Image (cartoon, rainbow, N blue to C red; front, side, top):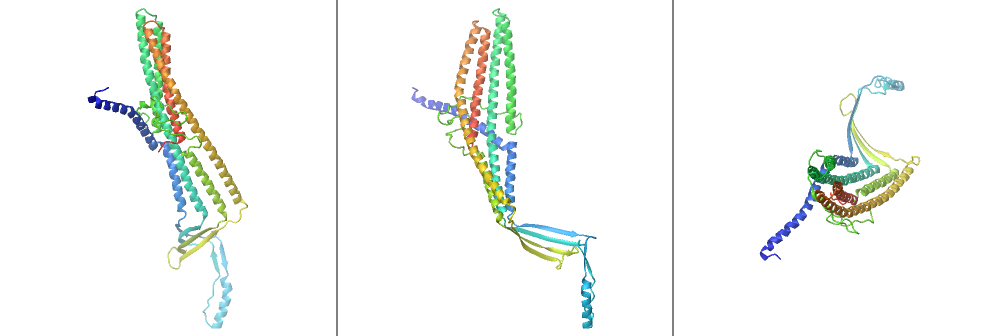
Length: 473
């Protein structure tokens, strides 16, 4: 029982211990979350997906622009020589009549008219005008806008799908880097151990307590461990390069290390999903295995595609609706390129298009649209079952990985104790070198298996997060 005057110190001591136990988890979330956010902001493949989404948005704006009046300026000036002509016998038709009228009136009020020859190709002719048109009744424009809107939603869902996949890849790449780094540390410790065994073996030979054979075996163990350590170091560089590649950074950029992620994991409940306090700081309070995960963008993308098919069906059924457009032209037209009141003109009108019969083509298009919709509905149901299975599999894999870690941890403790006893007996000359080598190998393998087991927990946790779409952007 502490004295009253030391109670405050005791309280601060326990607060310090609690803070020490909590801060690594907070650090874990901060480090990995910063990396994930950096990857979401800079990944080049994700940026390409955003371009597709932006293009879909611009297509929607283009579809909306078709409802507004369209105006354009058009000018044409032609020079022509030769070509077809049309003779018009104006003189032959009128001159005899004019002559009779002159005789009756005793005057020359009606002159003679020459026959005319009109060229089909106008020479020195200009047509300069402003053209304005606007659709009045056109269901295709309305349905086209609806389709473009759904395409924006489809591209958004595809963008979110890749974002979730990128989060999973970043998590697993970071976990892989930590595991390989841990493997390097294990081999470093093993290298120190085998070098110490080599030194002890050399002392035994110098003192005549053993033959040179034990030195050769010890050197072999050193060489093998150095080779394994070099391979692990190379894997560490590759893992770091791949992680930096996902974040679109220079491949040699050093990474912040969070050793807390490789600590002992919390065990999941027997009938629920992974409990709070899991190793990556991710909470799965409940996992519903009776229905597809509602947050999966794959379902939203397929649903949007289904709405596009339904809109196409409505568009196919609208073939009986006439299309009506209006237009207005104002400009100058005539011979010689100049503008005057004589050449000024205005032209306005309506254009009606009504497709009444196309040999049954419209009915066949409607039937095809019905088939496409039914196929998508079945595909949606199948996708839901697949996603439910994916969640179930990911949850089972996670639970299995968590249950394996305690056994691996006990194996490490046992292997270390076995090696300690074997080393003690070897130094006392009561154990063979082969026993020491075997104990050291078992210890290193147990530590590596434990590290891989911890990596499996983290990997399965990332897979479960991806399957349940639980990461919040």
